[in-house]
Structure formats: structure tokens, C-alpha cells
Image 1 (cartoon, rainbow, N blue to C red):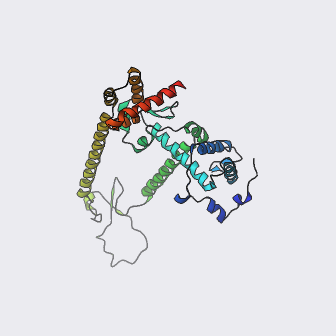
Image 2: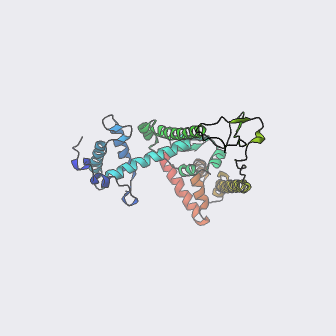
Image 3: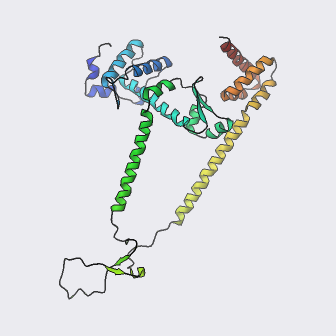
Length: 322
């Protein structure tokens, strides 16, 4: 490995400047730079350079030097390189959450998600993360999965276990805390208020509680239970409002799916002139493979629709001939 600049390893304000991740300090990354960063992360995933909490300062400094040699004009700081690594890890977490949904799979050839059928695709399009990954490839998925292995799932389990521990401690604290107004179940305790204590000397001893057989003998020290009819009314209204929004979203997705369906695209294509049966076959394959092609085709006006789909067909044929 190349020699590491000792300035990069100095503690203090210099490292704070290096590790700044403000929006104004974020850099624009391209595909070759991301691929090279991923190769560096894999290369430095050794016991010497990586711990349970991530890569060491020496590893980050060495990766920064190697990156500057490979891309001299990039001028990426260590903080910017760390930010890109965190971004890739966040995208891996997001993709794994989508892949954990029922009916969603991974197409390793196209490097993107796929669905069991169109009904599953339509139902899941209400999810924000599904829409973000719909039709988009992620070529780093397998490498990132190998790089982090179980660490992404471990982070999620660790966060969940912390919440369970806090809830358990809170429940135990509530059980152990005595309540001065609520009697024990099984029998009632009441204080003998009829005893005349004016003529008795002061005593620090605690009298035994008088056991009352009738619960009605308890003094009315506990306030009546508080009921909030307005709260239940509000919750009912909020629930109906959420259901109405869901129904509107489903109706909107159904309308979009019908407007940009395979059938609508095929009907519109056959109305065009100047195409043969081979072009029809190629267009049908593109329409079935990618919903984005259908939407773009049907969104074109009649003047530009024929020229646009002709370019797409020529590109598809050129790819197949390579």
C-alpha cells in the first residue's frame, strides 16, 4: 500500500473538518467512482482495517489516497467518501425491505425487482419505497450484500431489541410502583376512621389495616374513571379519513394501470403506419417487459409517437444483434 499522509491521521480540528457531511460539502458521484469505492471497501474488509463499527481511520485515509490517485480531479475528502458508503448501505437496507414484501422478487439479470403478477405490482405501488425501486436497476446489490453480510439485518434487530428492553423495563417499573389509591385484588383495605384518637397518646407505630368484607365500605378517595367520548369520536373520524385516502389512492392507481396497460399500448401501436409484423413483435416485448416504455409511448402525442417508438425498436434490435 502507498504511504499515508500523517496529516490525515492527526486528531483534533483537522479530522472534524475532514468528516463534515453538510449538504454544501456533498459531491457528485458517477458510476465508475462508485464501482471503484465498492472495490476499495471490499479490499479493506480485513481484520486489520475493519472492526464491528466499520473501517478504521487508517483504512479511510488509505482509501482516500487510492481514490485521489485513480480520479485526480475528484478532490473527494474522507468525509465525502464516508457519506457515499453510508448512502450505499441505506439503499441496500431500503431494497431489502422491499424484497421482504410478499410477491416481490429479484431479477439478477436485469439487477432490479420484479413482481409475481400485475395485481401484486398494482397493490404495492402505494408503498413509497416500492415506487422508488420500480423499474430501476441496482447493479451493486450482490456486492453490497456480500460486503455487509448480516450487518444490515443485525442493525435492525439491535434497534428492535433496544425498544423491547425499554418497554420491558417500563412495564416492570409500573408493576413494582405501589399505588396508594388502588387496593390489592382479592380483598379491600380501608382505614378505621371512627376511632377516637384525641385522648390517645401519640404513637409512631403503624396500625394494622382493617379488612372490610364489603367493597362499598371503601372511602371515595379514588376519582371516577375518566372517559373521553370526544377522543373516540376523533379516532373514528381519523380512521374513516385514512380509509378514504387509501381508497382514493387505489382508485388512482387502477386508473393509471388501465390507461397505461399493455392492451392500450398495443392498440395505439397498431394504429400507426409504416411498421411491419417484426416491429409489432418487438414493440410487444418492450411493452410487456417495462411499464415505463408503455407510459412514455402512450404519453407521446400522435405527431411524435411513431418516431419515438421507431427509435426504441431500432435500439432494441441493435442490442439483440450484439
